[in-house]
Image 1 (cartoon, rainbow over the protein chains, first blue to last red):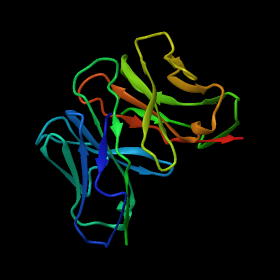
Image 2: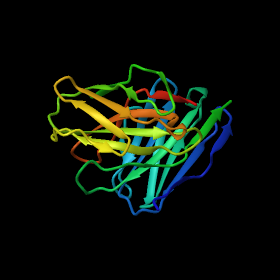
Image 3: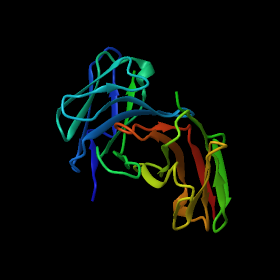
Image 4: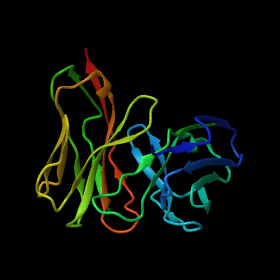
Length: 115
Length: 115
């Protein structure tokens, strides 16, 4: 059974703190994604990676960075957390190759509150 | 840039009835994929159904089917014989064919099933 896990379900941090959100997948997927989910806005792509040490900016990368040192792990980093980064963060992964539209498999999400 | 619009923030339906969720999108591509994802309360997002734009036949998965109107750029989801377990946020999403197939999501529709 496919599995994407995220390090925390709930996280509370203070403004200015450095925050790490971890995502691990056990499906040997090449692609990994970080989204943030806000009411009325749906999911918006922050960053994605199609290989180890490779990353590309999504639609809202400002204030975030990512790291992918191993194929199974993709980290989202908030260098200096701000209150407007309070949100639900979802990680997803998918295979690189294959036709028919590749399914993205999602983690349970991390609800981050920045005070 | 591609956009996806779900104009119904909330919908409700009686158990065992049929409900249709609307989605429109904008793209200049001729070939692409469309998806419906389901996010149950406090549970992980999962794929419900997908459609390849070059296929004229509408996709179906058990009680779930789509009405894909390419010229109108419309992609609605029909749920037949609604069940209590169908209660969730439903997201329409689009991806291009090439590359990592990153998803562009709509705002979501919250579906309530009335017993």
